[in-house]
Image (cartoon, rainbow, N blue to C red; front, side, top):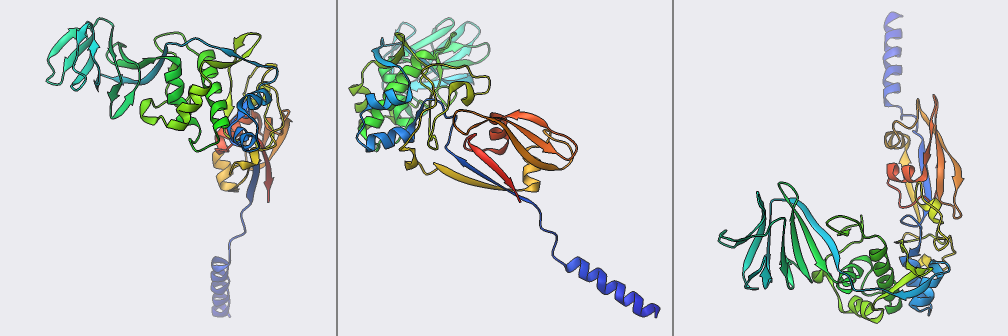
Length: 361
């Protein structure tokens, strides 16, 4: 009898071990678009151009009540690098008051007097004080740039800055923000918004812009294409204005069918009459016009850790903008939760946009 009981218990234990585990919960997130949703949708502009609209019509659609005006020519100062003790370059004809051979390599380095200009043999040519300048079509780390190079001593290292005209800057941006194969009217719209954004967001201090998504993606002469340069030339000096001043022409990849008011597209954003939500009828050209993401319970809890207590139960959307983008939502756990912004949700879950809905099974 005891032996039979023991055998039965062993069989039951083995059965329990071999039985399939209870299915874990899963989450499905359905969303639209890619980016903050404010201003011009690049894929929407592509769709408008494909359907016969010109760049002026495209800009007028996305920036309510604006006009096109003319801008000056610069200069624009773009930060290429920081934190380096030395920057090597070629293609320069002069620097620090000295004539240089454009075919030779030179370098700027930080020293106690500011910036030292040296040749390829490391021989000192000149001390440039707090900054050194080299002009011409420069080659730096395999890339080529229009305009000049400015190296500023930032303590023990250098700020490496490309100083150039506005049109040259825009040429180095457009080719990196949209495909050169797009319709010419979409490229021209991008050229105008890049120029406007560059003017309206200039920083104070030693440089105006970063060369990445903190400003606009800029990669100099090496990245330029004939098609994007033609778009810049066709819209020379044109900017989007409101009440006579260039505006911050926010733009992004994909709207999902509707753009967003500026006060809802960014956490703590302010309302502007020219950055209003508009329908975007041709944005479905984008491969991420609609998208779906899936998470397990474990993955969701890991990504949202610290925003709830206990077990994650649901996400309640509290407020949406003029489009269905999430402005605020409550993360609900079995022992408590908290309210977060749509931007926080997007960042934590690495979503393409805040236009999202959540379903747990």
